[in-house]
Image (cartoon, rainbow, N blue to C red; front, side, top):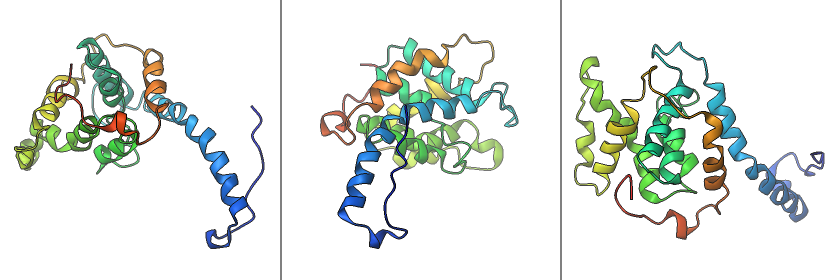
Length: 201
């Protein structure tokens, strides 16, 4: 596909015209349509990266998490969330959970985005005490309606997904789900409204 070299007339936004912003609006839609390609490429780029000290790379961890979700009968929102939950590890290591939630939030149910946003806190239950931290930070959310969802996400699909001997589905097998989720209209209330408070309906 040939990309247009058409550009706006301004070098600072306050000098832009309606024609300039109409042009940017036209270019935005095809750019957003390529988002699934960027997310899949970001996962692929995490392959064979073993400097973190884990026995598998970050891509394999993502695939293992998503495979567990799929095998448990989770829907596309949860499967794609499991696949992308650590996509921010390289660019935002100290707030990777919020990064991933920001990617997902316009396209998935509210509880799914919340679980991904908080999974870093809940995941620390498994290791923080070994590093002098508070493993029970998740108790800050004890009264939250999705506390159990996030605890289950971490227990069943995340903290146990570092096993090099587990059979996993390949990245290509998740492509259709990724494309389906990100083909939705962003911020569609019919999609983002909270659903049942369980991982598998």
